[in-house]
Length: 277
Ligand code: ARG
Image (cartoon, rainbow, N blue to C red; front, side, top):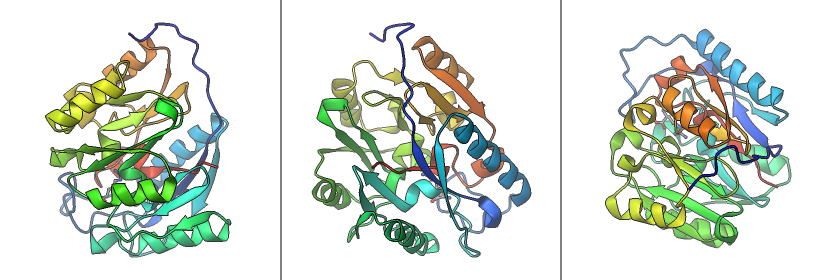
């Protein structure tokens, strides 16, 4: 049982984001994308900037990646790599439209002197990987089924030296792990069971008996696509019931509006990669 009014403690985070200056929906690689929908890139930048300011206002450090013309999804910085304990496991995108983003992320990490491990398997970084430093001694959760290949889970385990638990995604609307599950502190998660196979749901119940569980409406409003510092949970403003559940569990929900970026099939977490030293 989740203890109500439990004292939650925030921890300062370091994030990487990329401005949606060149954001557009020019191709459709997930069910949310519709190339006939008009996108207002200026509005996208405004909303994204509010998100960035919110994170900085909470005391976090935000690094910026330079956006590149011709890479309209580059705003979704979560997909560029997965970082644990100072080691960076690089991404290798499934769709060629996004392939060039991996090199931009790699250059950022190499310039900053991080230990970078290049992948040989298809994986979309933190879009499909989550890290829980205090769960079972340090656990990686990994999604497969749509983007990241199962072989990349084993590769990530070898690269990072942390146990990787594979979870199978079964609903194309939840094509990345980070639209179906998020860490809310160092040891617990929030997730939408319907996005996972029955067996993977059992695995999640076993590993996280105190998890916060979201309903389909909040999940479809991208409510799970959130970032938390252990206390403050920044999430899409449409996921109102989920915000209430998090509050009841002792967290502090911080709603943000990201309607333009939703047209690309992403929200808060998709825009943010966590740099873990
Ligand atoms: N349009 C992007 C794609 O389909 C959205 C990526 C969202 N990112 C995420 N981490 N879920 O690849």
